[in-house]
Structure formats: structure tokens, C-alpha cells
Figure 1 (tube, rainbow, N blue to C red):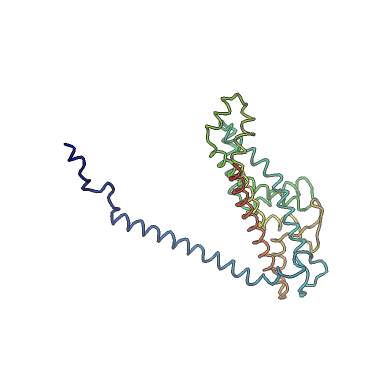
Figure 2: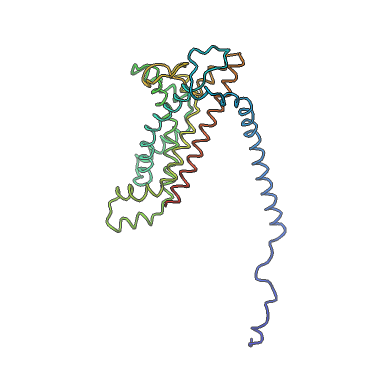
Length: 300
């Protein structure tokens, strides 16, 4: 080989074009995925359209967000869901206050200190809770909190049942976020002589915080529409009740269930309006999760 040979252009291309069979397979797979997505989107869009079409007249009312149904007759187009919205927010908030610390600490234990019989038992119990239906959780709290301990039906009992449903979601989402934290950060912290607990608090958890917050907000959105706990553990009230430990308290799922037996057009309007309100609340939580994740990620 001489200099003239080296200066000659390459006769064959360095990269060959993709084979026709691979392009056909890729196009076919893309078409199937897009088609499946479109088919799955059709019932979701149809449900959303029906709820909006039948419930928008209720939510644009001037009294919908600021009044309860106290003193409102079944056939009257009056009142609102202030009492039910308050009950939903209070019950979900109490459940979040109880479930979030327990779930995050359990996830930290499983990821950072996991190993041995205790970790395997905790993982097994989380898996069991993840598969428990909401009616089973409600019946368990009813038998323990009301029948055995003698407490009355209340919004707090509903929150305890929601804790059982929320806890596995928080544990699993937090656990996955902690696993995504690079081990190099932990090792660098240990190399500086920082204790393990301080490394977890100052390095690991703040790094995984955007994902943890997203999982927490999505778990709240998951429990906020549960119907079984409110049907079993608390009665419906047409006015607002500020006592979470005693008395009946309304919520959006309970309002929907109660107004279903009302044959009047006003009752049906309240059903669809409450359903649309619940969708709006869940959408706000999901958007808040996305916004929190993006904001914390930019700061990092």
C-alpha cells in the first residue's frame, strides 16, 4: 500500500442502510403501539366528555363551591358541595399526615438498611397491603376501631382506612426513587466521615425528593375517590361537620352515592357535578405533582 492508495476514496460506505425487513418490523411495531394507545384513549375521552357535558352546569353555579346542601330540598337547584369538598380534603389530609412519614421511613429502611428477616417481612406486608381491596381495609378498621375499641363512626376512621390504601403506594414509589440515587454520592459522603444517618438525611433523601413528592401526590389522588371506606365508616351529612372524631361527614364519593337515589333532575345534576369536581381535584393534584417535580429538578 502506497500513498496513492491511501488517498483513494472509500469505495464502500461506512454505514449500510437499514435492512428492509427491520424497517418493516419497526413500522409495524410503531403502528401497533399507536393504535393500542388510541384504543385505550377512546373510553377515557368518552367518560371525560360525558362527565363534563352533564356536570358543567353545576360547577359554574355561584353557590356550588361556597354552600352546602343544608335545608335544600331534593328537587331544588340550589346548594353546593362545600361540605363534601371539605370532608374529602380533611379525610385525605389526615391520611397523608399519617401515611407519608411511615411510608418514607419504611422505604428508607428497606433501601438503606434492608436485609435480614425484618426487611423481608416488611416487603411481604407492603405487597399484601398493595393488593388489599378498599372494602377489606374499611371492614378491618370497622372491626378494630369501632367494634373492638368502641369508637364511633367518624371521618377519622375513614382516614385510618385510607392510610392502609395509601401506605404501600408511598413505600413503593419512595423505594424506587431512593434506588435511583447513585451510590457514588453515598460513598463520597462516607469518605468525608459523615455518618450514615446524616448522609441519608442530607444527601440521599434530598436527591430523591422530586420523585418522592410525585409519588406522594399521586397516592393522595389515588385515595381521594375511594367509596368503600366512606360507606362503611361514616354517615352522610348534608351540612359541614368540623369534628373529625365524631358525627357524620360528607365527601364527594359519598355525595355521589347518596344523590344517586334522588330521581329529581336536580339530584342527577348534583351527581354529575360532584363527579366533575372530583375529577378536577384529582387533575389539580396530578398537575401539582408534575410542577413540583419540574421545579425541584431545576433547582437541583
